[in-house]
Amino acid sequence: MKALAQALRLAVPIVMALLAVPLSAAGSPPSATGNQLSEGSVEFSPSVSFSHQNFKREGYGNVETSTRLDIAPTVGFCVSRHYEVTGALLTRHQSVNGNSDTALGASAGLTYNFNSAGNVIPYANVGFGALFYGGFALDQTAVLAPMVTGGIRVLVGSTASVNMSLGYQHESNADGEFNASANRVLAGVGLSVFPWHTK
Image (cartoon, rainbow, N blue to C red; front, side, top):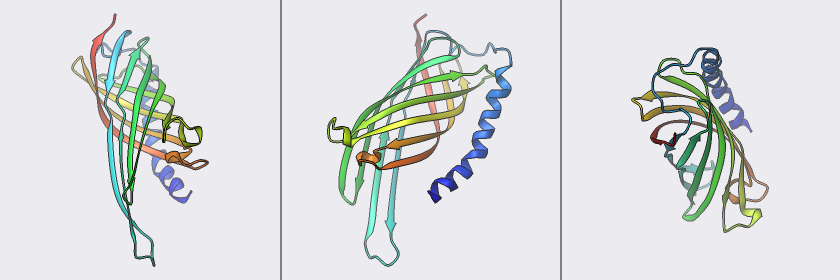
């Protein structure tokens, strides 16, 4: 809990700064730069994260090692200039002291893209998901809800954007452990491509 409180103390000023941009841009007229987020646009956002740590308790000789890899290719469909429905396939592989486990799952969400300010488009997303450890046993299923993200897109040409985001994620049955829970503050920078428009 102490670590979460410290993370939130660091994250709140950044969240407020990110939210200030959408609020100021929400009343602005739409810009004509780029058509990435027009009705019928399809967005593809690959996401990969990797972490490795060594952990040693004071007074104990053993060093615990932990490695984690998350892969989440995400596809979005713009039902209007502002609203976008998203879906992702989730893969999480982790190894703790040589014991490995892989979970597969999916997530769904709704993104609101605010009016643009030049080539910058603020956005907010809310979603939920699940990761299945050891098959589809409910007591080994991690539930990701809520998944809340805010950020900005910087449009690049007419078929791509660079995205910066900050989010919060609550995980029940964390890492497939029944009744365990985890709270995560996530920051990221990524790239989206808009390969085609359906309309």
